[in-house]
Length: 136
Length: 57
Image (cartoon, rainbow over all chains, first blue to last red; front, side, top):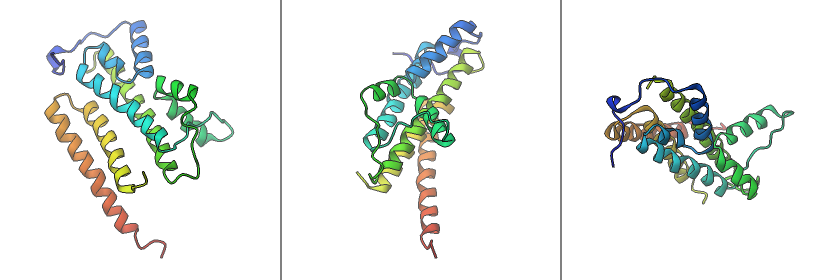
């Protein structure tokens, strides 16, 4: 198995805008999918495992998937951060895991894991965008 | 699981891993940066923990 990680292996031309949107959408839904799309297998596989695992660790720690309550700006921002993890958010929501137990000692830890996992995936999407634009 | 240090280390591991993989391309460089970040997370937590220990006064 070869790993495309050197500058010589990378595509330098910018991808078509429609393709770029599609790749970014895939990277949001499945962390690491964008890197896999562009042939960065090592990075893609690490993101694919690490980010959903981090989010699910948060749910295991009794963290909460925050609702989109615009009357509570910080809660809404946390909800946006949660949503950053993509498909894992939808699955967790559908299975009703991540309801949060506010009395649990690990509640805030869980929230932190889940929020940061989503935010890290936003950074991963930005990296995919840069790769698609031929900047990296 | 309520071991604060273990949770801190787990969080530091995930964040260091993702940042190292994002910021470096070669596996050796990734391991080096990730190790440094992980160590920095733990060291900072220890220092801040002891600095905050006397609070509230």
